[in-house]
Image: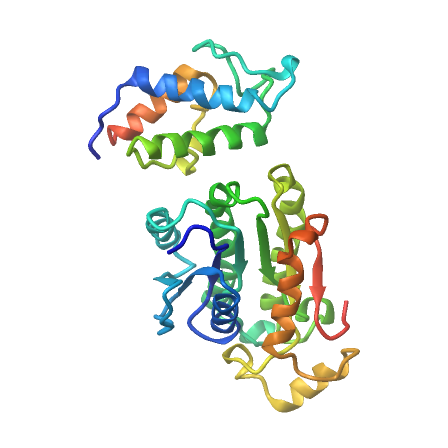
Length: 102
Length: 235
């Protein structure tokens, strides 16, 4: 796979998708776009359905950039530490996947 | 393929009900994507088919990867493909049991899992799964086939809840026996005994199935979800 976007760009795409998700949420439920803020996992505001919506939207946005990957796969689901905890861990996971490290 | 047409994915379009449904909905103006283990031979400007073994997830991945080049939206997924083995418990090989569950349950699961992102883009997203009257009739010799379809029914009811947040409805149709390859190994006597257990004592026809699917697909059916509709008056 030819990777033509960097990790920072991935983070910005994740933020766009979180903002998309936030539009449908009331203020108290909105997800922070701080890169190390835990948005999925224990004590987070995002439920499984919210995460699913976010990841589907994210795959679409990456697709638009010519990056065709499946984020929600068996590997991601079987990790001891979920790659979906923060913007930073999610960006790492996607970047590694794009580099064929996963 | 024109994007303004409603878009449907049907599994098992090489023959039988799936082939009929592909032709039926093409006639009604849908763009239809089909898949089967063999080529369907169906030639229509709005029909695209993929060769897929539903028991192999990598085949399904490959199909959706190619599908993305044709459409970003699917309005209806019809999980028609299925295999049956009419055998008593001790006459059913383990490999056959695995194959039945692999295609009927995991194949349906995998198709749905990968369809969600396409369905999300529809204004009236619909899922229709296939069950069978063998579930409520508890037919001898169909324990594995019926059990696999029971799993599909439970999946239907639960996904109706899970996917309602995306306005996706999820229902099942349970056909009575139809003269297709699926029942070609079942003797006439057994079929006659089965029909006796139904309120309407006749074999179903393809159009009986499409009638139920039409109801599920109707934009007016957006409150209808998690339902199993059997043909012939059973259940």
